[in-house]
Image 1 (cartoon, rainbow, N blue to C red):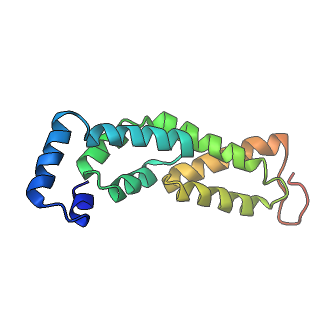
Image 2 (image 1 turned 60 degrees about the vertical axis):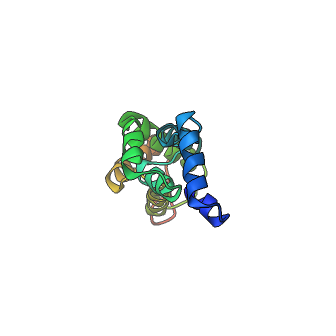
Image 3 (image 1 turned 30 degrees about the horizontal axis):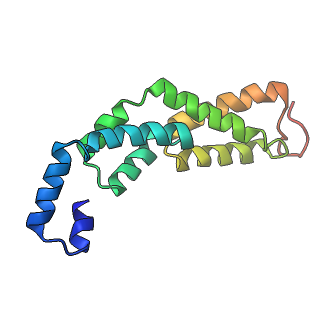
Length: 145
C-alpha cells in the first residue's frame, strides 16, 4: 500500500501516518491477509504451496508472514487437493496414451505449485487405480492389458 501511495505522490510523512493509523485499527493486517489468501486460493484454485508463496511474494507479503501462512496448510489437505485435481482431469484423458496422460498430469500439478515427488506419486497411483476401471491406451493405441 505504501508503494501505491508513493505512486500517487502522497508525501511520505502523510503516507506513514495513514498507514500507521490503518494498522492500529486493524485495517492492514498482512498476516490475516496471507492466511485468508492461502486458504482461498488453495481451496478455490487448487494451488500448491510453491504457487501460493509466489503469489504472496508478488502481493508484497513479507516472507516470514507468507511462510507462517503456508505452514497452516495441512500436508494431507494439499495431497487430497492434488489427488482431486488429477481425478478430475483424468476424466477427459481416456483416449490418450498412458505416457502422454502422465506427462500432462504431472505438468498440470507442477504449474499449480506441487512438488515433483508428490505429483509423480499421486499421478502413478491415480493412473493405476483408473486402469482397473477404464484403461488408458498403451503405445500401440490399444487398451493396456
